[in-house]
Each structure stands twice: as structure tokens, then as C-alpha cells.
Amino acid sequence: MISAAFIFEPGSYDARFLALDAKIEAAAVATPGYLGRETWQSEDGRLFNATYYWADLAALKAFSGNADHLEAKRDYKLWYKGFHIVISEVLRAYGDGSLEHITATLSHPHPAPPP
Image 1: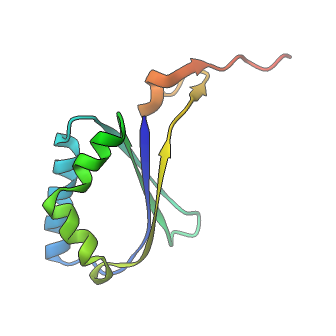
Image 2: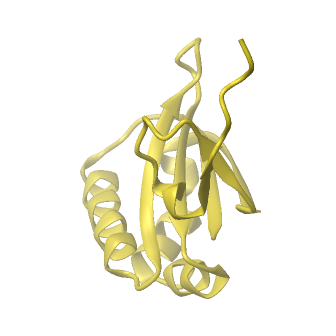
Image 3: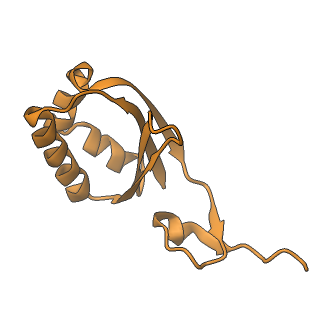
């Protein structure tokens, strides 16, 4: 499993951005190997993180070649103050089983701490 964290500081969004964003989201979901995404916001509200999960690197590469995605990457300065992307291989995921998560297929119950 691969995760791609898109960390960004928003700027100003216009109608073109909103249309591209909707197309890109639809393209991601339609890409074989797309597993889901989760979003987070920094405590101070300045930065956002959209982490996308993929079955493998081939799925991420297939999505990365999407024409709308490439257009948005080319013109990112129109809508973002800055961005940073982290591509990671998800090796392990675990928890107590009470929360659903995209990585659940990798999860192994984590034993409860001793009393």
C-alpha cells in the first residue's frame, strides 16, 4: 500500500479551480487501486493535508498522469501559497479495532497494555 500526502497552504480558489478539483477527485476515485483518502488541518488552521491511499505505486502513477491533475500541478501557484508531497509505503497499521480506517487490511490488533 502507498500513501501520498498532499500538504498545502490554500490561497484563493476560483471557478476553474473548483471544476478541476472535482474532476481530479473523480479521476482518483475511478483509478483502479485507489483505496480512499483522509484530510487533516493543522492546529493553527494554516495548513491542510489530504492523504490518498493506493494499492500500489502503479495505481498512484496511473492517477498522476491524469490530464486534469497535470493541469492543476502546472498552475498550482494560482490557488496555493505552497505545497509539499510525501509519498510513503505503508508497511504496517494497527490499533484496537474500534476505529475503521483505510489501512484496515494491513491492521493487526494491538494488544492492550497490561493493567
